[in-house]
Length: 210
Image (cartoon, rainbow, N blue to C red; front, side, top):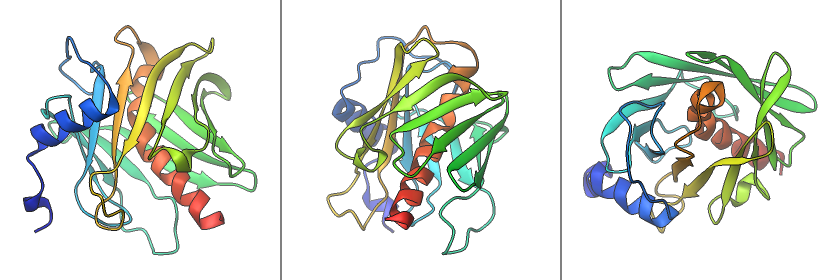
């Protein structure tokens, strides 16, 4: 019933893109060539699935949890599918003593690595070599700020905003909006599609460790 009371996806997407401060002059056709991606939570629960749409709400795919996580888990596997429902990225988290790692397979292969619990830097790696980074003052603060996506040279090639879709923080999970440099290509461009799933899990790790 809650979803039926929300504005249609196109209106929600456009409102979130405007709130994030992004302007789109030319859009692509798939998950991997869009300058802006909007992740809309389906239900108000701890482990929401997300519909992924473009800046005007056109469906591009979804982020779906794999299996049913227990209430004691703070990370869980998930899958990115395209608009036809075909899997394109698999996300497998693993927690270690001093880091949390999210292995990515599919149309791109790599990993997101978070060292420690602060979570202000998420390294994007392949074969243990870093080729990108997500930076923020602290991931728990994404509701009022943004994270930067950097390439291996430290150039800012995208920004990720974490925005509430309800004034009541317990009623609905926040949405994510990614804005990327239209010229960004290669593995970093494909892997960053998995970033909201990773960042949401990092937030849960922080909250569980607080």
